[in-house]
Figure 1 (tube, one colour):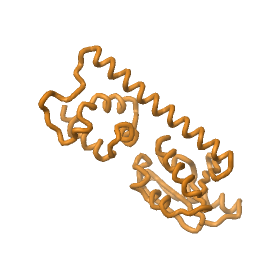
Figure 2: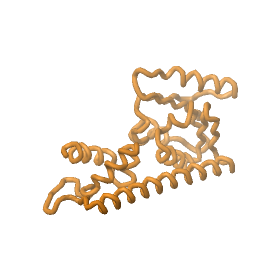
Figure 3: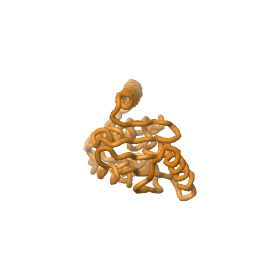
Figure 4: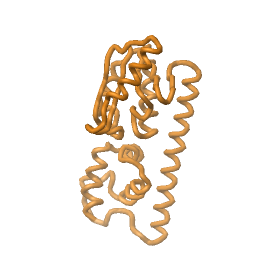
Amino acid sequence: MTYGYIRVSTDKQTVENQRFEIERFCGTNGLSIDGWIEETISGTKNYDKRKLGQLLSRVQAGDLILCAELSRLGRSLFMIMEILSIRMSRECKVWTIKDGYRLGDDIQSKVLAFAFGLSAEIERNLISQRTKEALDRKRAEGIHLGRPKGALSRHVKLSGKEEAIRILRAEGTNWAQIARLLHVDRSTLVRFAKSRLEAE
């Protein structure tokens, strides 16, 4: 089965350009699309909350997913790596047209997946290190980072991590990445940030 995956972020964007790119590629390479998956949703939304997640759960070995470019899958390297990891476990292929990636079972794909994985690990370590340094700096300035003694919270797991969240957001880290770093669900993190950070 060959699937065409199209994602746009807002209603103002059109799926037609991506569909045209995929159909033109198929015409040139003798392929035909067996099913289209189209959605209007932000790429920062985790893939398992999108139609993409449903597609990944049903693809079989040898299936092919075509998309215009890698950024259509997700807006962060972490998320794209998770998706490619699922692809490898399901033994399906992902081809991107503009980027020219051909991710399958060949050695080139495995090397590319390793490079993506290494990049994601480096990015994760750098974010963690920057956060640690910033927190150490705050502590050296005498700023108390934990929750006040005796304070109660419905989000105990995130209590005391407000400053880390502020720093990561200030550096442009998205909610999904922060949630993974703190080992919580993205929706829990966002609710916590709205109730605790915006109230301060």
